[in-house]
Image (cartoon, rainbow, N blue to C red):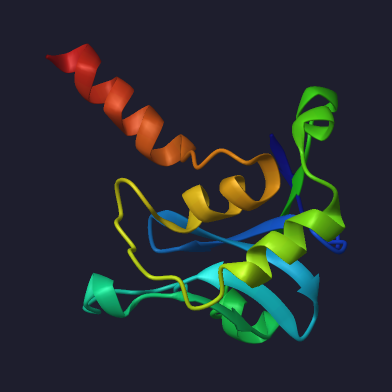
Length: 132
């Protein structure tokens, strides 16, 4: 997956850099971005973090928007934008946030591809394995 500064379309994965990490969401329209928690959940009880919808300005949290550019193989694996957004809406209010096992990147990949994965977590685990 590559990232661009292009305007997102309905059902696209979007992200914004927050401190040293990215926060991910799904674009429905300028008034509706579906995301697991807010861009900065620092100090919040993980049990209080839920799948929510906000406007784009709240999602961006003062940062710059990036839109996923899916590869051909990723496009073949993805759910349609309509199914992606429908599934995401079904998850609104869901809790259980965990930075390692159930974060905002896991959430968007689950909605789009049907598999909850996080490249940040996977690459960090790989780096740790190399050093052991």
